[in-house]
Image (cartoon, rainbow, N blue to C red):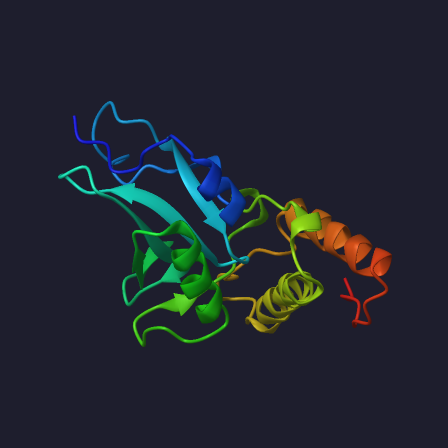
Length: 184
């Protein structure tokens, strides 16, 4: 069986920030397929990552992905035009795209907190502040949604959002970074 996401990780990949983590199985909709599979990924920010992949000819490459929705209603990790055979180059290319619009058909979203592993010590002050502000923007968007409409993010419905905000806030405080606190 062809395995699209290899699970071996090299020292070069570890040095570039890659780790083994579970992701949604692209083939999870097929009968008897698991919903999650292990993969080698490098988180770039709350909505971006680079994933190690292998083509049918067994050539390893790295693809950038952004969490969001396209013109279709489903929300998932979408491929970016970041493809490289070198893990460091792929990470550098993906980092350059963080916060930048990449396609008129992809609406960038922040994944729910259970989809991102918050190992905050490895993030820069700017990245943590961006994640924190993402929570504030999601809360604002939910609060501005009319009562008759479905909330896009469900910030007040899911306690993980507040827990993530508290973790990010504590990290920003410990680094003496100035920011505007979320008003719950």
